[in-house]
Image 1 (cartoon, rainbow, N blue to C red):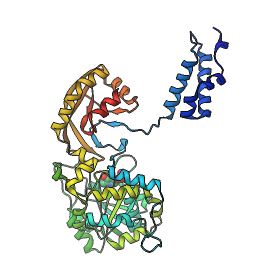
Image 2: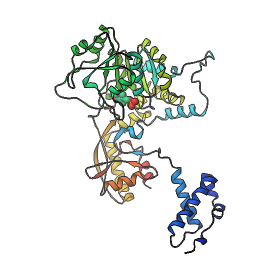
Image 3: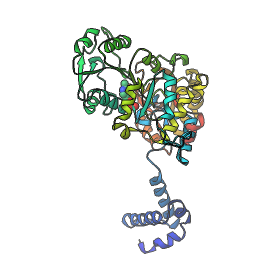
Amino acid sequence: MDLRALPSVDRLLAQADALVAAHGRALATQALRAELAAIRQDRPHPLPDAGAILKAAARALDAAARSALRPVLNLTGTVLHTNLGRAVLADHAIAAALDAMRAPAALEFDLGSGGRGERDSHLRGLLCELTGAEDATVVNNNAAAVLIVLNTLARGREAVLSRGELIEIGGAFRMPAIMEQAGCTLREVGTTNRTHPRDYREAIGPDTALLMKVHTSNYRIEGFTAEVPAPDLARIAHDAGLPLVNDLGSGTLVDLRSWGLAPEPTVAEAVAEGADVVTFSGDKLLGGPQAGFIVGRRDIIAAINKNPLKRALRLDKIRIAATEATLRLYRDPDTLAERLPTLRLLSRPEAEIRAQAERLAPQVAQALGCAAAVVPCASQIGSGALPTDTIPSAGLALTPAPEALAARLRSLKTPIIGRIHDGALILDLRCLPDDAALLNALA
Ligand SMILES: *Cc1c(COP(=O)(O)O)cnc(C)c1O
C-alpha cells in the first residue's frame, strides 16, 4: 500500500469550504491532520479518497461541537428530574430571560428617580402578594436560602430541630452539614418518629437562636409518629421570643388539588401558620429557574439582605427576569396549567398519555427494531416532592436487551432518557411534549 497516494492537508483544505465555514480554518486543519494520521497508522485497504476523509473529519468536528449539556427527552417519569435540570421553563420566562440577555436592563437602577435601585425589588412585590408574607428576598437556590437564614439568625448559637426532620436532600445537602457551615449548633430534639411540644420547650435556653421546621419532602415517617404542627411550634417559639424558620423545600404557591394532584403545603399556609421565615425552591414545584426564596418578617429579611453572604449568593439579571415572569403567571390560576410546563405535565390526564402511547408504539417498534408494549406507569413529581404519591401514567416497555436499547437511545442526537425496570426499557410518556418530538429523535 502506498501512503504517498494520500492527499495532502493543503489539497484537502482546498476542497473543505463547507468544513471551514462551519468550524473555522484552525479546527478544520486540525481535524484533517488527525484523520490523515489515523489512516497512516491503521493503513486501511483500500485507502479512503479525499471525499471520504473530508466526511470523516466533518463527523468528528460535528460530534466535538455538540455540547454534552444538550436537550434530551425526559421519559423517566420523573417530572422534576434534578439530574435533567428540574423544571422546564414557561415560554414567558424564556422570553423574559432572552430580553434580559440581549440588552442592558434596569437591574439595580430606579427608572423613576434615575438613582440606584434594588435588585430584589423586581421580585419582592410578587412574592409578598403570592405568599402573604411581609417581605421577601431571593438567593441562588434553596440550599443557599437555608444557609443564609441560619447564618444571619443563629451564627454562634443554637438552632433547635426535631430528629425526625434531619433530612438529606441528595448530593451534599444535609441539614446538619448546612448548620455547621452556617456557623450554628444543631440542637436535636425528640426521636426519629416522635417529637413533642415539651421536647422543644425543654431545649430552649440562653443560647437558642431559633426553632426550625423542615418539610420532610422526600420521605415519610409512618406508624407510631408524632410531630408538632407548625402553628403550635410557632407559639412555642414566640412564647420564648424566638423566630420559627420553616424550610418548605418544594413549596408550592397553589393548592395542587385544584389540578387533581395530592396536596403539598403552600407557602401562604406556612406563612399563615406563624413561621417568621419560610424558604423554598424556584425550580421544584414552582416551575421556574433555579432560585431560593426567603419570605417572612421584614426585620429578618432586612438582616439577611445585610449579610455579606447575600452578595455571594445573589441572582443575575437573567434568572431574575425569568423568575419574575414565572411568578407573574401565578396571578392568573385559570391559565397557569396551560402556561407553566411543570403544572401542565403534572396534570396531564392518564387517558391522554395512554392514547399517545398506543399511537406511538408501532412506530417506535419499527424505528428501533424491537418490541414496544403499552404499559401503565407511575410518574413522580421528583425533586423530593411527594415521594410516595405517584401519578398514574402510561408508556412503552421496550424489549429485548433493555441495557443496549438504553445506551442506543442515549447516543442519539437528541438523547432519549428512560428507565430500566423488570427487564424492559420503560419510556413514560408523561413529559413527551408531542408525538413528533419522539419520532424526530428516533429518525
Ligand atoms: C430541595 C430541598 C432543599 C434544597 O433546595 P435546592 O433548591 O435544591 O437547593 C432544601 N430543603 C428541602 C426541604 C428541600 O426539599
